[in-house]
Length: 295
Image (tube, rainbow, N blue to C red):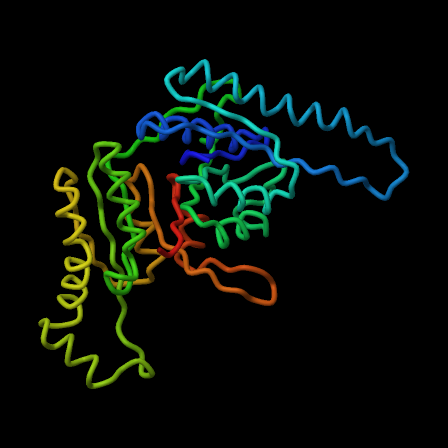
């Protein structure tokens, strides 16, 4: 299957905003757009009339309506659409294997209900092999109006760890900033070492750099250097601040068109976890959020 940008469709205003976001991104990048709706016939064990054919037709109609709307608004973008007979998580995770990125509404009334706080979206983000972009519909938007393109004049990206740890995140952020013709703000948060993480060896590195904050600035600059050389047209702002990584990152999104964060998926007895920084970004950032898996 050719590389494409894929958007999940569930009929909600948030899903519609995600579809338009994906269509604009496809137009910018010269990629095809694929729309998918997950629908799986699951008879209920209750004494009510269930019409499988009618439900299948409704699912197909919902998808074709979205396809027709995008074809009218973006005639230059090749569009395909398919009802995938799978559960939402299985369908979307499977689509991610062939997509450049996957766009989802941040809250839905259909297959991906509870995207931000429920299990479906968290499982998709934790297992997807491509970046997943969460898109909200603006508050109070007329459901019949065309969702507006996001404002902001920069892409914001969170950088943590070593240069090798963040290659995928920085690569996606620089590529997106270049495609949009905007600047990039790279954010690195730091905190004072705790009693349990302090060691003479680690502090010697900070002392050699002139202190903890200069050490963090040096680490950020080193991580950015190869990407600055690869994308010389992208202006970069380096932002180093003491504080919680999630809070520092969200506070830096006032001018953001997109926030890009990495994913540290963990398994737990209650399901997949995506890491505290990605969790904070998805819940609190005012702009679309791209969660990028490790390389």
